[in-house]
Image (cartoon, rainbow, N blue to C red):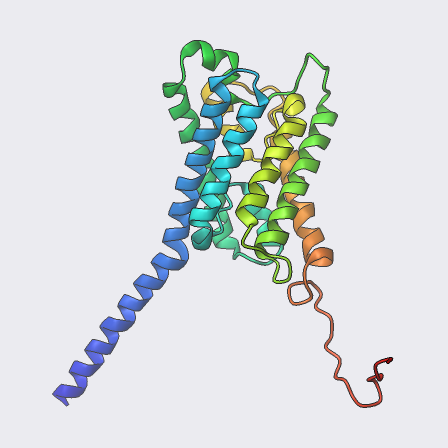
Length: 266
């Protein structure tokens, strides 16, 4: 009887340890990656963009190259979303549970605010003022209206999230080149739309500079536009682009019989 109790205690301790390890691997570690990854992405992106005011090329590659490295390094742990719109698209695509998606978004927003605060300390006052703290703003010189900015942010985010879903998640089209493809998609989007809206594609990237630099002009555009883009990208993937094993509704499997199989034409 005593031996049985010893074995039960050993088994119970092993089960408890397994649960702790499972919790760390499936929830705690991915959350840490989302916080650290978003912090690094926003920090290096803003830092590079503010070091030379008005240089869209430098800002685009600062964000894009940083994202490539983070995806290649941490992608296997959390998926490296680093963006509430990406998390929303992945959730709609059915690739993440709702509670983990909510925690991801919270970590991304907090990290974005912290990164913007750090950049304020690293960049000189003149450079920081010239780049408006890295805030995403509509180009008033070219008279970009709010509705134009909204449409621009919608389309570039739609493209960005669609590429992520196809090259990183889909069973048919995912590839080991995903970090490179996703990073260059971000670079291309910023080069295309940066001079019009700042090319946010990411509410967590825009909120931090808005708070720290107190730049709130048309800020709502950088939430509504990207979130709509991520939503439509997730829906389009789930119903149209996804391979049949991930598409919804799933097609009914048809059993082949001898009468339904046609002979090959020679």
